[in-house]
Amino acid sequence: MARTNDPDVFLLAALADPTRLEILRELAGSSEVCACDFTSCCDVSQPTVSHHLKVLREAGAVVSERRGTWVFYRIAPNLQERLAAIAASIMPGGLVPLASLRRASRPAPLATSPRPPGP
Image (cartoon, rainbow, N blue to C red; front, side):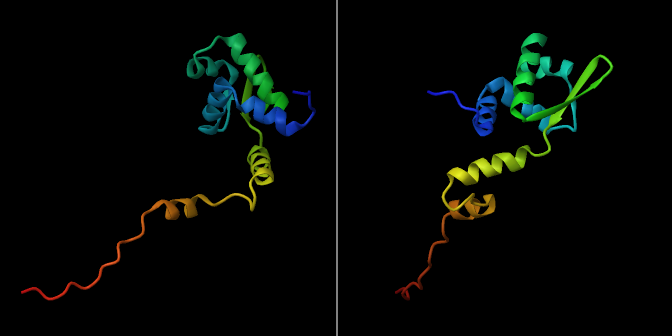
């Protein structure tokens, strides 16, 4: 496969790793997380966490802020819009709202016909 500079490809590749996806899930549950706190949720060493955070930061999935010796991470403010735009570009007609999928997955009520009178 040829190399690309497409930021969407970099983002999707960053999100495809299980550890990085777990980091994003951890971030989704709070406003920000210190880099040192990811080792317990992801079950990897601190250098490995730092590598994954760097990949996510370079892909634009997270933003960071240094406070003294600590670095705090949060999900990039535009991540949801970027992911929605990627999905819309590959889904004919755009995304289907989740509520309509729930309605469509429910079985239709059975039609009841009047029973003929019994003996």
